[in-house]
Length: 225
Image 1 (cartoon, rainbow, N blue to C red):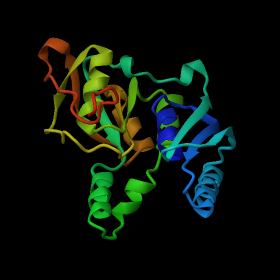
Image 2: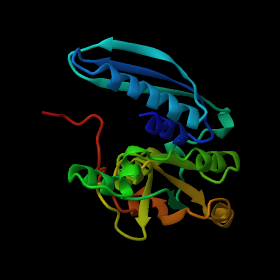
Image 3: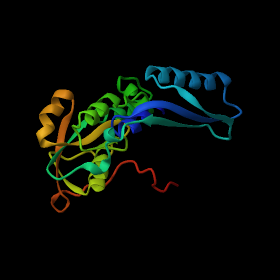
């Protein structure tokens, strides 16, 4: 929970985390040790990222639930939005693809493997986001929390551009928490020097000429039964 909220901050550029608020509800039959383990684990991970837990609320509830909100600060010039892409730019990405989905399969099968950590402990791309924003290497930015294909579609829609992709993108590979961004072509060499693990996905084009991607993947507002 802490890490995916930090990824939301990274998705906005050079945002410095300043603290998190945690809310949790525990059923009456929840073992006290289990609840303490959760809070201790949260404190340890917060210390790892240097982010204080500012407070929140703990209560008894019929169902077990958790919610975390991360707070951050940034200079206005260091904010990157989804809407900044223009035609003729390179669409790129940094971070793993499909590792979290692989970890979830292992978890459901009761097996162990390195991919489990990718599911339970995703790495928010705070350093990469800071470089993109502070060095003005990117024009638009979004994190890949709901699937690579959906992230590209949302960025293109917000920016009013089309996409010409180098290869088909997977439709459902969420929970990886990498970054998807656009880079002016003249800055691509500088970008790859600053972030050698970034790689190209395609290019932006005028909306009428680009492929239309369905925003498949996780939808926060989809109806549930």
